Image (tube, rainbow, N blue to C red; front, side):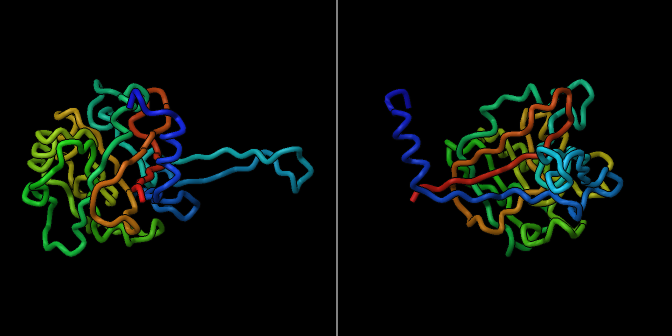
Length: 224
């Protein structure tokens, strides 16, 4: 990349397809039961004679598409703002499990991971479910799958489900396996427009100091 000019990079990124795989956030976006729902208040409005439009928002940092920091399950672990930026840009493998008969995302479903893969995103039927509907019947990730991905050099795991663990779980085995492996997770993706295969991805969280999570805008790129 050292010999590649900025014009070359820009040209490459202009000649491809971008796919937004994050969920929209609005007043009807459902959140984890008991979490703070999204709301917006307007302090200034041009239609009321103000010079600008100015609003404030309130929401859980786990709303819609978001990144969990290790702090989420371990009070002594890292918050969002100190996580390596390099973990959130690179090559991702999208694995389509929509037509797979399984109760968990088990290791046999991730047999072949290309060596350059930094992240793996799991596409399930949850990608077709609206952000306004809460459906607790999702595919959790088996902790042994985390071990296999970690051994393959993967540092980020993404799911279209609200969580990598079942809703009723109290021990959060997948969350803890990811934290123990030094891996991060994205939850609440919407992969309905992304076919299985390799992409470049960008998934930058907000730099919220000391936060256990952050909303994220996640995009995929495939060159033409």
